[in-house]
Structures are given as C-alpha cells and as structure tokens.
Image 1 (cartoon, rainbow, N blue to C red):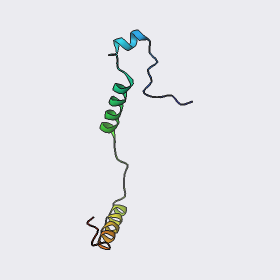
Image 2 (cartoon, rainbow, N blue to C red):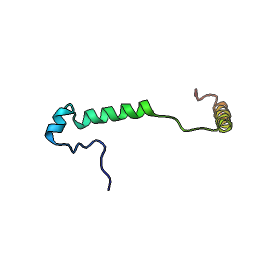
Image 3 (cartoon, one colour):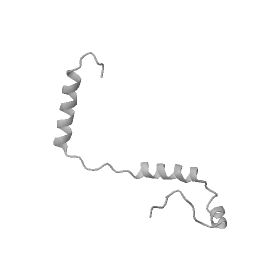
Image 4 (cartoon, rainbow, N blue to C red):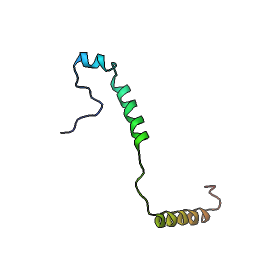
Length: 67
C-alpha cells in the first residue's frame, strides 16, 4: 500500500500547531529538502572520459548543427 508523503493525517489541532501547511507548502519543502540533500551516485572516471570523447566525436560529425 502506497501512501503519499504530502498527505497530512494529523488532527486539525496538530495541523494548526505545525503551521497550517497545505499540500503545496509541504511539496515545496519536500523538493527543496530533496535537492539540498542530493548526493550524486559514484561515477567511474573512465566511463566519464569515454562519454566525453563520444560526445565530442558526435558533435564533430555534425559541423553545421551548432551544438
């Protein structure tokens, strides 16, 4: 069973005490927290170099594309 992280199941009194936040305000706090706490996954340097070279090669093969 999936429950929304934005739903508020507190009593009306608890909701008032916690600042009367609606779902938009809770969602706003959620995305800001997720962005602040995000840690990119480890990425192999060799793969990064391969991708960088591949991208450069692809760009070079389309000289008129302005990419």
